[in-house]
Image (cartoon, rainbow, N blue to C red; front, side, top):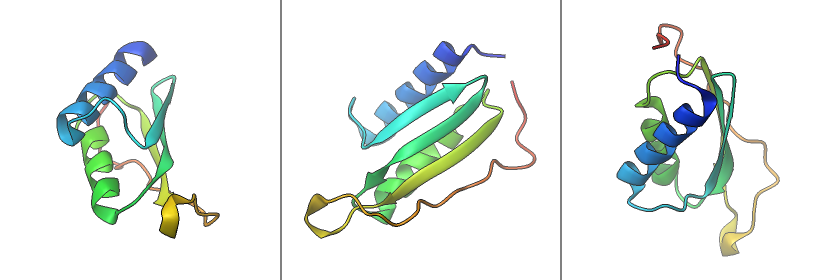
Length: 93
C-alpha cells in the first residue's frame, strides 16, 4: 500500500496531467489511504476532469468528492457539496 505522502503526490501528478497546471481549485486530503477532495469549480466539466484524474490513481481505500459549484461572480456557494462514494469493486494496490 502507498504511504499517504506517495498517494498525495500521485494524485497531484494525475491532476497536473489532466488539467495542465500545478494549481487546482481543490484541496486534497489523504488520511490512511482515504482521499477527500474539497473545493468549488466554475463548470461541471472541470469537476468531471478532477474526479476522473483522481479515480485514475491506484492505491486509495476510499474516495469522497466534495466539489460544488461557484456562484456567479466567482463567489463560493453555500449549497452542500455532492458526495461520491468510492466504487465498490475498486481494489487497493
